[in-house]
Amino acid sequence: MRVRVDVGAEASHVPWPEVHGAARGVMYGLLGEQDAGLATELHDVGWQGHTLRPLGISPPVFQVAKRPKGVYPASGTGSLWLGSPVPRIAGCLLAALAGRQVIRWGSVHLKVRGMQLEPAPDHAKGEAVFDTVSPVVVRHESRYLLPGDAAYVERLTHNLRHKADVLGLPSAEIGVEVLGAGGRRRFEVNDAVRIGARARLRVSADPALLDALYDWGLGLNTNQGFGWVR
Image 1: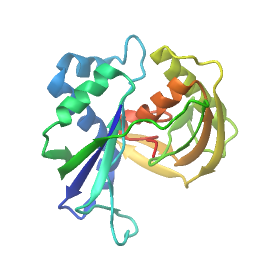
Image 2: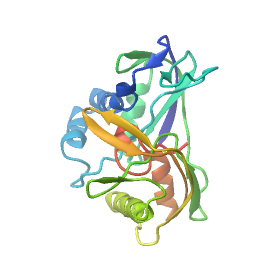
Image 3: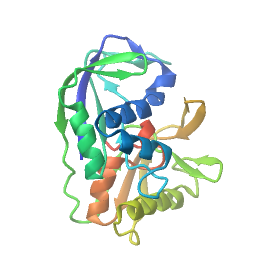
Image 4: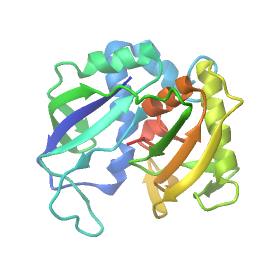
């Protein structure tokens, strides 16, 4: 399940350290309101013996007439998305959002104007083209990879197989093709560097896994707002 939350901000911009730095706190705050034990388990350990956390969120995206250079602009009209392929987690998020009037994104207060569930597209053919709203984070050892790097597809495929294993879904027949990419983006998130690029990817996999990726996101650090699928 994934949900779009329509929001408005009175602030003119979101400070760069908070664009991704606030995401995890929003996720665990919502989960903790409904199931404190679940929130603690995901934060401290991961999901059912795996270090991955099946949580996805996007930074808020705003409609603005002009995007000033060097600023992440905000306005009174925008949206953010969040979700999970795990029903227990998704149910907690949905319950926490019900009736909510404000989401605090770091120092920026977002007035909630409405929300809507977004069902996955039809993935029955076992193939999907995913465009990401936020950079996809992929690593090999200590190095961040970008879509043009030689090991990018192999490491991203490895990550998708790991996600499939976490969810108990078929992981053998997964293919990834890079169709396009944005520029290199570097963020500091809670004193840690994250480097990636937005990507347009053709992914072939079991339809249930494609549905799950639509709700979860691609690559690493999805609970910090990276790799969210448009």
